[in-house]
Length: 89
Length: 452
Image (cartoon, rainbow over all chains, first blue to last red; front, side):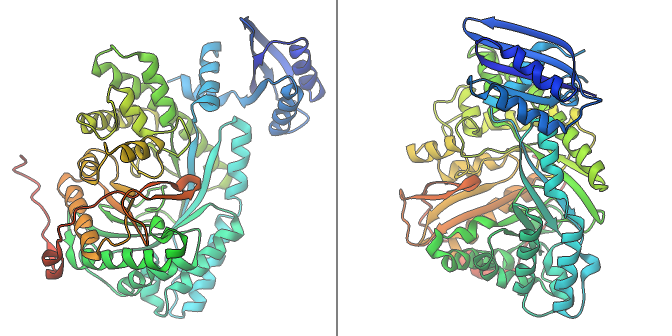
């Protein structure tokens, strides 16, 4: 079971570190990370294995949003099934 | 393997383009609650709804959090209450209060099914229920009511059409202090679908299983954004293609949510209703989709053609994405719930007559249209008859949900707030159909061959 974590917003120091810290705290294993900075806009997509997650996916989502909210960034944590459903026939 | 562009596309749809699941609606049969004693019957109704739908809201919220996709409404639709009223007798408004109480207990946004199906005539309970609708709508908040007065197979019950004109007026008068909001929860249908998850027309048909989960998807903003990306110069068939692909993606999401809700609740998954349902929010308008196709204003020449294309392409894309499609499926054109429609009505581009033409190709009918408070019951009956005729002949669902707002005149603005929105009072023809409506009787069912 995997979750897709996205963070988008103005670039700043330590965004990735904050996201990784939240994952580590709840035992979400980061499998893949892609990030780009276009102009000043930071965009990151992270794939995490949440099989052994120690909390609810909704708790992970809330904590992730809080972790980056003060920098004005928007985080989404979504179960990977939604992407498979939408984009695969 | 997931691709980063696809991920960002989905996130953008939800974050910027108002993509959401409009409703998960649990359909519940109340046939086994019918009792010759109305109080006992009401008790059974309350118990069954609160037992089966106890976890509906919590399940919906859990799915929202898991997938990060908003599910705007959780609703319940029940067996047409006229059937229970027919068995029990007594004042049907007791059922209205029971349904409201059940809705409050389980925390749903709406409960539908204060309904009667009278396309071919009235049976026990039908007339009593219909006559009680204005009171039921005035005394409850979350209850929705619908009456089916015609079908392609049965024709149009003109006695019911005449009666419903009066009922709509009475519902407006009983809620006069609240902008006649009673009428916003009452719809008159022709060819009503039995599995529709959308209000106000949702009820649980007699051919349905005991309990079922139906899902209504939305996403006008996503379609508009996709059309904008296609640009102003592509030929029309490419617009249809863009709509199809977008509808496919939206529907797949609905299918995922429906299947998951059905599994968690242990209730069979019924249908997905692939409707583009607008909200008053900026960027969530069906009218703006039509304007994106190249119209200066929704309601101007070309509008019906654009809507026909949109409605058909939505179905084509959605059918491929879902195991079972039903309900109303297509594009809704409610005036008060769509920012673009409101603007078009204010500008004079969109009139009642043009809306009627549009309903021959859209998924429902004349929806959430504010009329002057002095509109006569006969005029409303005439509007209902015209709309039902379009549905009957074209083998499609049509509906009338108009609000003759007491004390308001053409050009005045109403504001219901929330999903119901608001907008200007629109003019209606001053020529009366009184002579026709007074006759009563029925319009025979139309020919199904020799089509021209």
